[in-house]
Image (cartoon, rainbow, N blue to C red; front, side):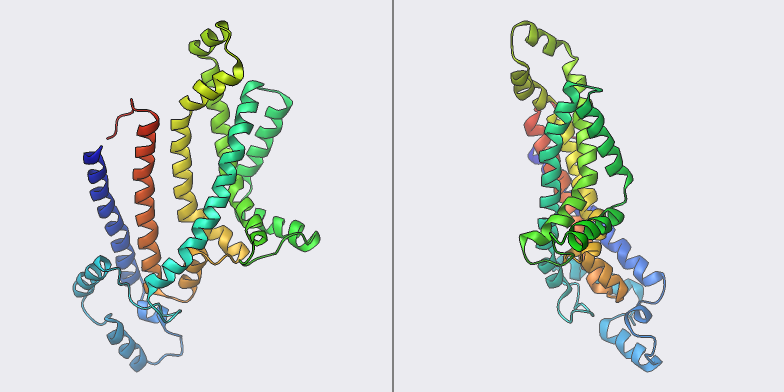
Amino acid sequence: MLEFILRRLFQGVLVVFGVTATVFVVTRLVGDPVALMLPLSATEAQRAAFAQQIGLDQPIATQFLRFVGDIATLDFGNSLWQRRPAIEVVFERLPNTLLLIAAGLGAAVMLSIPLGAVSALRPGGLVDRLTMSVGLLGLAMPQFWLGLVAIMIFAVTLRWLPTSGMGTAAHLVLPALTLALTPLARFTMMVRASMIDELNKPYVKTARAKGLGLTRILRVHTLRNILVPFLSISGWELIATLSGYTVVVETVFAWPGLGLTAVQAIQRGDLFLMQAIVFVIAFLIVLIGIALDILSKAVDPRMELN
């Protein structure tokens, strides 16, 4: 296990470095970073002075070596928009994103297991048809559209919840539910399919023949057997949410997290802040992948770690 963790950490370091280096290369070779970070009215003298100030007047190789050294100390320079260290802005906004993800995915996990189990017990029944219909609808609806509809209904028309921002628990409800719908649909379908497969296996029929109740079979055997695939899909859904879904939801609801900050950094041409955001997200994704493998091994010791 220790050898596996060390190997994955080494691979993770390479992945994080590769992703961040790719951002470095793309932002410097595709277009002019100075032109992006300065207003259109800036003169050539101002552009030259600014390029010298932030080191963009040096050769690409020199810039890259300096960039690698800065990564080692988490020094991404000052955010041009916030006028303070970029990594400080990231660490300030990161807890807001993690709170939103925890609320959204937490709700999806807690709802999907009972919904999927009930649907599996009566395939083709009313609950199953209703659950699958809602699930397909959740997969088909774009999150930005769902968010706007939720704002129109619950914030504008009914006036039950705030439209945007962050402050109270009520501000979290709409963005968390919007974020939860797509993972909820996938989780429920996965639990349903896995549960139907498990219920048709010989060990379940044997347990029923010995007089064990269905509730006990589900709790002790069936749910445990579907836990590993459920952990896998949950982990990848967490990665997808962290690296993409939150950008849409935070932008729609003006939630001050990393997703909204990334959009604002792009709009303002804040190169240094974008590099810091990409680095932190890549690092978190690597940690999630390692944790997912360790949890799966703990649940099912028979699983081989590669």
